[in-house]
Length: 212
Length: 316
Image 1 (cartoon, one colour):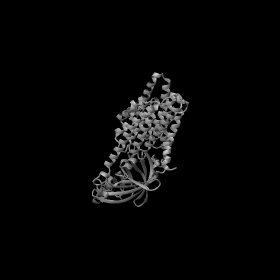
Image 2 (spheres, helix red, strand yellow):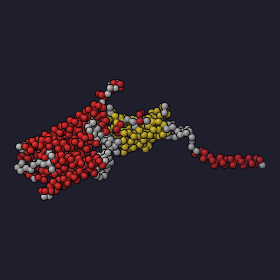
Image 3 (cartoon, rainbow over the protein chains, first blue to last red):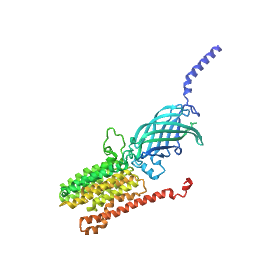
Image 4 (cartoon, each protein chain N blue to C red):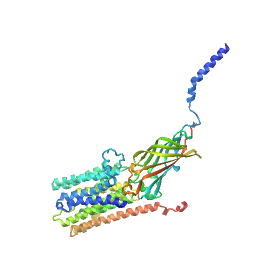
């Protein structure tokens, strides 16, 4: 009799555990983040910038940069999935080392800051090309024109700072500025400035701490 | 052809020569005896100079994009491109105003002129909106068109000479402010106005019963509207240290023709009177341009490393 009661109790416990198992499995994981979960990263404007390169008069390369990029990314720190970016540059943060030239670039012949104050890149998809190395496709919105571009993005490192974990990225791509309505200096005046602009985006962001 | 020279030929020389040809149709032919032709041709010429310069740099799509969607064109609407469309509208308005002035009895001519200026002022205030536009800025723009017309009317027979100077100043200030495209377009109008003034002087000398040059009707409309619009546009995108008030003064420069009114009234000939009026406006123009250059230079020096006592701490 006792043996039969024990058997029934065991059977009830098995049924109960089987029925509760899915509920236990889907309960939120507290404290620690799963290794494959994408981390939210907020870019640190002080350590995030874009450098552009364009040919001047068919001769030397001229470099300038946009300081203080802002935005976010998501990426699992174990590189198990692709990073996704949403980065914004303010045109008034252009810096060539010459105030006069900065003013010209903010003017309507180039970036037209008064009408189009920001430049934005928002990624849409990515394809792995190596370890921590991705080909990221997304939309670049510049001077009110949105075009799809492909950026070569590398995770440059994962470090530790006083405020927590930091991740660095470097993305490179090339655009034809005429595609965005920025034609001054290509045909008129002919050859004053190249059409092809190579961009290097250096990003560093803080990894959001997992909620307790 | 060298890139820069080719550019200047395309956006300044060709538009100005084309304008001179348009003006010549009336100014050095028997049409010089017709008041309507002497009014219409130079007015259209100046608007065409701006329009051709604009389209040679940006293409016609930049004009049409202002008012319609164009198949295959996905470049953005830019507010300053409205200047090109405004020049086109002024060509049409010039024809309408000249036709109306010819049709009404003599007493109604001035009423037509004033009505056309009020319409142009209203159109400018409503449709030409630059970034950060507000009700106040739009009222200001409309008012500036009327004020510029009143100022240009004082130039009288010297209208095209003072227009040469006034657009030259806008071009120079736009260049100082880093707006190269506006600089060349206003440069084209400036050169065109000089050529029109020369052609008008020659035609007046060699044509019997030539109609005199007057600052009224269509030419007054085009000069006032274009000066006000380009000056406000230049101010909005100005990257230099030039103060706003100086940009507001530029369209009024032709009014300084008034300075030597006594000399102009006592002048023995129209040419001499024209000289005195031009001289008065030129003095004001030099003062305005000098102030713009000086203020930009002083502003740049104050912001620059020259005055920075800590410049060396970064390694010089």
